[in-house]
Amino acid sequence: MFDKIIEAIEKFEKAGVEPSKILVSLTGVERSVLNVLIAYEQAMNPNEIRNALILDVLAYLLSLCCRGLKGYELKYWRGEFHYPVNEKEVLKALGKNVQPTTQKQFEEDAKILKKYGIANIPDYRTIERILRELELMGVVISRDEVGKAKRVYFINPLFLEKIKKA
Image (cartoon, rainbow, N blue to C red):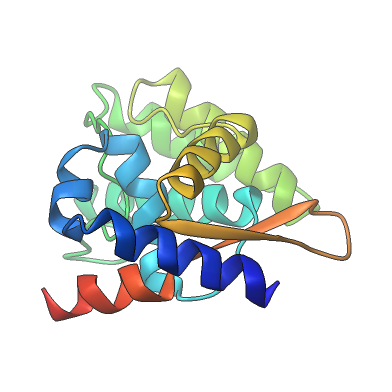
């Protein structure tokens, strides 16, 4: 694993590209995925990243509806966000969504956000594709994980250091 980290750091150093220039080249959804890894500063699988994005958008939506976290600002999500036309219907749907397991609830919340055109949170495969592309650029590093998740991703330490300095 350490060989992979060293290789990614060397690749990033050889390219000599400023992190701000990389960030400008990303789409809103790609930037959102990267924002989660930067903020958490730990290895995460695509599902954990997706859940963080769903929670971010839901907390922001509830703060706009004057419920829950007042004054909450989006921390990670940089994709499109549209305030729902029928606020009461959305809140009712979210209120009904009390699933026995957390993961099912996240999936249902994502479906509700998409159904009402609020935000289209990317699915597991899309996030995994984005992470592989970021890995090819040397921005993130992956490693195999023991357990259900096949692979976890973390931010390149050199990239993180340069982002924090900027």
